[in-house]
Image 1 (cartoon, one colour):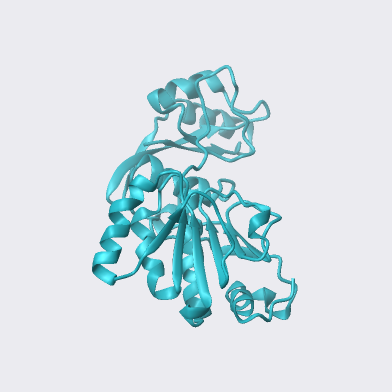
Image 2 (image 1 turned 90 degrees about the vertical axis):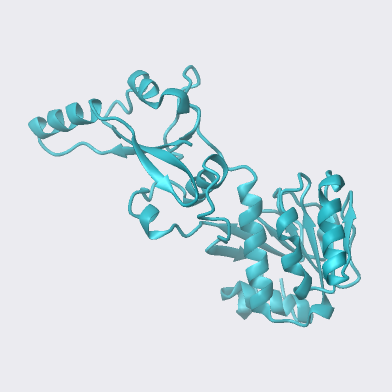
Length: 278
């Protein structure tokens, strides 16, 4: 559970502003349900020339003061209990889903492709089998091989396929697509197609994902000033909701300079086919 903090700009006219400020001062956080998860709270606060009035805001937020989803332009004071929520493992889910969607759209021969998932905390265990039909080999780099043991055994028993689990990344002899679920890349990936939610400098072609399409009910209440990724991540991590479990980034940038650069899936297809210009 968390607090969605929405700032309200002052109305025109002194009397209107006083009424508005009083109404917001007396308002309380409103509970909003989520899909198959815990609710979150929505709180509207007055934002005047002096900014936010933090002491009463902290009091209104109560035990959720350390779980604030708000515009990144708002600076929450260090000397209060007010803390901004920043996305954690959900970014890895979103970039995995993005890569999965683009590999499917590329519609290339799986025999040409190797996929490596950098999943050091073993967050993506339940999604690995979705890659099996799309690549000749699936590799996982993780610090928690124990968490993958049961999954890999199940995949072998059901599909007769082996998922290779390693402690570090090694280049593949095939066109390798690397999905960095923790965002970090390194120079060993220089010949690979690299997906990350952080802008990196490594990879023959690099895909950077941002922005999550919000469902209509959320789009109506979440201000444009709040990053959609912050909100979707909070719903996923703090409410355990399934609303965004299959979401992928709507904006995907690449470093490709070919004419296909307007379509990331085309860029990936060019990389796999060996016709890529970067």
